[in-house]
Length: 83
Image (cartoon, rainbow, N blue to C red; front, side):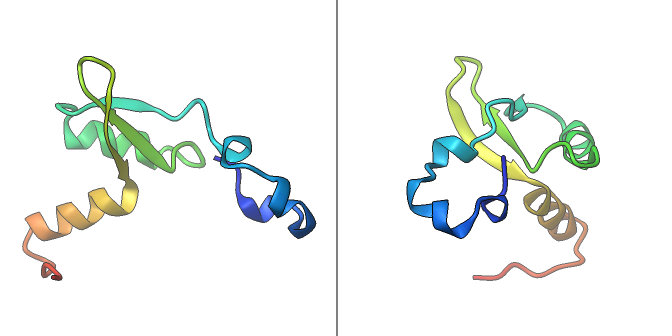
């Protein structure tokens, strides 16, 4: 995904999400193990998010590094759930 910050302010009105979208976003299956997801997200400068897809190829969700790290923190008892 390209950053909106790289687009001059005067072009924001004519810039579409499609212009910024990353067509090469990595896809993982919902049964992918956490270690592999973290490895993919930790590759420097590579991925900001992973698209989680079903065996039929449908989008099931989006996983970010902060999502994964928060879940691991909660699992290890080092954090509290916020409501």
